[in-house]
Structure formats: structure tokens, C-alpha cells
Amino acid sequence: MEWVYISDLKDHIGETITIKGWMYNIRSSKKIHFLQLRDGTGRIQGIMEKKKVGDEVFNRIKRLKIESSVVITGQARKDDRAPSGFELDVESLEIISEPDEDYPISKKEHGIEFLMDNRHLWLRSSKQFHVLRIRNEVIKAIRDFYNSRAYILVDTPIFTGAIGEAAGNLFEVKYFDYGNAYLAQTGQLYLEAACMSLGKVYNLGPTFRAEKSKTRRHLTEFWMNEAEVAYYDNEDNMRLQEDFVSFVVQQVLRTAGEDLEAIGRDTSKLEKIEAPFPRMSYDDAIEFLHQNGYDDIQWGDDLGAEHETVISDQFEKPVMVYNYPAKAKAFYMEPHPDRPDVVLCNDMLAPEGYGEIIGASQRIHDYDVLVEKIKENNLPMESYDWYLDLRKYGSVPHSGYGLGVERTVSWISGIKHVREAIPFPRTLNRLKP
Image (cartoon, rainbow, N blue to C red):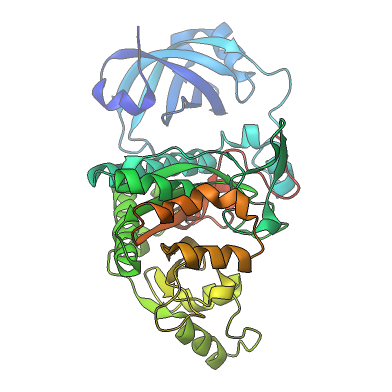
């Protein structure tokens, strides 16, 4: 019989076909088994009647353990009552392998540490299956956006000798005779070099932050998409971010609508995510927080998670908080022309309490100003000789941003913690599986 994936069953109604997959549940009566099957593309119910397969096979299947791998042959038929819209009338079943013991994840309530210890198996559950499919569509939409605008993909290095953000949260490694190297916090500095050649560029890959944080928004290893455009100023950059996030959300609604529905996401909130987005200056954000009783934050402080949530709760779309104090941001950000203590930058805060999903800025393009900032931040000048070269030869204003993939997936999916937005999360206390 022809091997067919569950996702393609709609094209084989009335045909006798074969499905290769796993048994994730079994319900039985005296004469019928209801076999819950999955194959990585979807789920379907197989109906096995005792009179069709005989006593021996029927009784053997009754004792079959959950997560047995099986090859099932039967006739596909449409059934509007079924969750998938289809069912399979089983004619034969071959057992490929059967667990020796009961599957460790059951319907009973499990603690998060147990589930994370068994992440390699938890991925098979319905919710995790759908979240990872949504993640796939988010990443596809990211690539589609840049491809539609003729951006060039530039793969930036994982090992680096230059500090991209803050020295205090670097993973340091020994690099042969070179000395110390670091796992990249960002590919931004390399994208700045590339945009001077290719005009508009982007990357997509893993980044690392040695932050001792246990919040629901942080991972030590996460994926980031960054973009950089020559001749873009801060205003150009903010418009690009609005277009980008709107595109990603709307495409994921189209391509992963069934997955979002399956995990109970209220997609009406996502349907509102279209440019333009509301904007709020950092000055106004601090004033707003003070008016609402948050006297713990003072001008010059970076916004914390609670502050971001209070601000974003005022809006149905992401809000862009712009022009932060220089001392709260990275060394490479362009100073405001009228306020040297402020930089031309923005953070994009997602609604519904998901916090910052994008950090962005116009970059310093003047050689002398950049040298001064490197010295102010006590960074090793020799590590940035190549970065300074970009300001010696044909320097131009340029801007860019970085989007955290897991935070974006969490927001779009409506899940509480970023650890469920990546297949195998790395956190402060977790390096396994």
C-alpha cells in the first residue's frame, strides 16, 4: 500500500493506504479499538474492529503500550466529527517496536522539572508538537520577509573576540594559542561590516548570554534574528521593525492558524498586529511609571520586566519605547544630536506581558566618537581595530535591530515561558537533555 502522511490524507479519501507512526493512546470496547495515531505531521484516529482483524491481533493490540511504533494499513474516510476531519478504518497493523515499560509522561499532573528532565519525550505531547510547528512558521516568515525585500543572509560567527553587549554576561572559552574567545552575544558588529558591502543584510542563529537569571523571559542560549541597513537612520529603522513584526505575525496567522487554535491561542489579539505601532519616549515612560506608583525606577535606569509589562498593557499592539539614556545602553549607539546623554535607539515591547522582543539603534558612524565610547566602557581597543576600520573607509549612518526568536514565539503562541519555545532549552541550571 502507498505510504501517506496524515497531513496528506485529504487527498486519499476512499483509498487503502499505509501510515507509519506512533500510538499515543488507545481506547477500547469489547469489539472495537480506537487507536490514536501520530506521525509527525498530524494526528488521526484509527478504528480497528475485532471481526476484521481476528481475535489474536485484536487482543495483542489491546495490550500494546503507549508510544509503540506501528505501521497501520486501512481505508481513509472523511468524518466531520473527528478532530482531524478524517478517520482510518484499520485493516492491518504491524508493530515495529514496543516499550518494555510504561511511558513516563502520563495524563497525571507532572512538575516542570520532571517535564524538563524528560524534554526529549515531552516534545511528543500535543502542545509541544504545535508550539514547535508555530516556531517553524515564525522562522519561515522571518526569512520570507527579508527575501521579499532582497536582503542578503550573512552568517555571523559564534566564536568572537569582540564584546558585543556587556562584558559581564559572556561565556568565555579557550581558543587554541589565540587566548580567550567568547560565545557570541550578538552578530551585530559583523553585520555592520557586511552592510557596508551588501547594503541590507540579516542573520539568524544562536546567541549566548551568561546571565544568572531565572525569569520566564530568559535563556542562556537562544536564537536571534538581526538586520542591518546602510544609510538607515533611527526613524527608518523603527518603520522597518513595524513592517517586519506585522509581516511575521500575519503570515503565521495564515500558515499556523490550526496550530494556534489547537493550543487555545486567542488569535483575535494577533489579528490587530499591523503597522504602525504606538511609540513612547523613554522620558514619557519614566513619567508614566511614576504616575502609576513605580517610584523604584529613576531616569537613567533600564526598564525592568515589571515596568515593561505595565507600559505595554496600555496597548493592543507592540509599543516602541525610544531614546534611552546612553548609560543604560550599549557603547555603539549613536548619541542624540541635541542630547548627548541620550542615544538614538528603541526597544519594542510585545503586548500581553511578553516584554522586549526587539532591541534596536542607529549605530555610531563617526570614528572619533566610537573610539571615545570604547574607552568610556573600558573595552580592549585592540579587539575592535577591525570594527573601527569600518569608520575609516566610507563610513555612513546605519541602523539595525535584533529580535529574540523564543520571546516572539512565546508571544505569538501565548505560552508563559520561553523554555517551551525552543526544542531543548538551556537555562541557568539546565544542560540536559
